[in-house]
Length: 150
Image 1 (cartoon, one colour):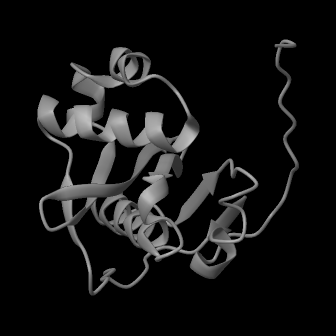
Image 2: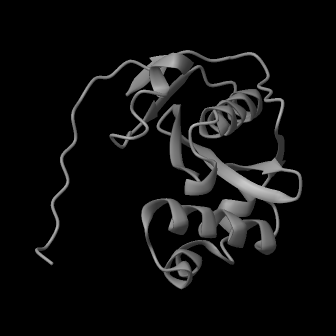
C-alpha cells in the first residue's frame, strides 16, 4: 500500500499515550509485542531487535501505552524518499480497540515531522489491511508469502 498522505494531524486516542523507543527496555517491549501478535517465541523477537542502535536512533518506533502497559507498536523509517511503515502489532488481548491505527498514525506523524517526507508505503497483513485505507493508504500490489510445510 502507498499514499501521498503526509503530513497528518497529530494522533490521539483516549486510552493511550505514546512513547518513542529509545532504550533497550522499550525495544524489548516492542519485540515482545511483535512476538505475541505474530506467534513467535519471545526470545526470537528479542534476538532480532534488542540492542539495535538503528531501532533506537534512526527508526521512528513508538509504543502505544495503556497506563504502564505497552499494548501496540508501530515504526516508520526513511527509505528511498518515503517513509516505510514497519513492524506494526497489537497485543492480541488489546486488538480491535483502534490501538494499532493510533500508534501507526503516531509513527507516521513523527517520521514526517522529522524528515519532511510526504509519501509513505507499507506491506499489510490480511488482518491489518482494512486499517490502512482509513489513514489514507491505497492498495497497489498483492504480496504472497511462501513457507515450508510443517
